[in-house]
Length: 140
Image (tube, rainbow, N blue to C red; front, side):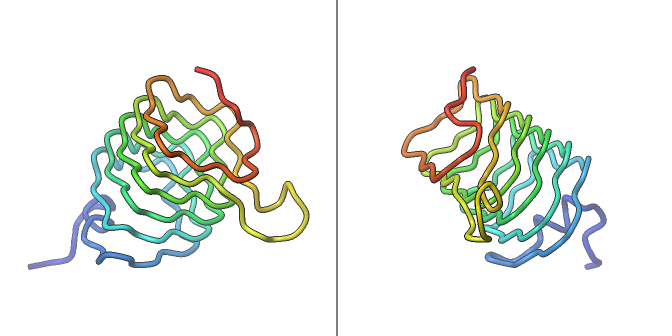
């Protein structure tokens, strides 16, 4: 059997807890991808289509998710630390038990998660944990 042919297949084939650093997934089509609790550090997902993705238990540290479409995604237990979510679409996403927090990188606002202009209509926010998130509270 050969290597996965698409970026989506490549990510889905990664073993549980695999770490990815400084990789770009900008504008990628990752609709409905199912990930195995991957750890992303300083990765970019600008304008990436992650609709209906399963990201349960994934960790994002210092990642750029500006304008990412995460509508309908399952993000149960996700950790977003020091990430930029400016303008991300999280409508109808399941954020049960998710943690939006910070990374100790120096003086704020460096290392804080930015949720400015995030869309959350119909998102499930049960047990969502927030630690010094910029742009919160969010409406709509």
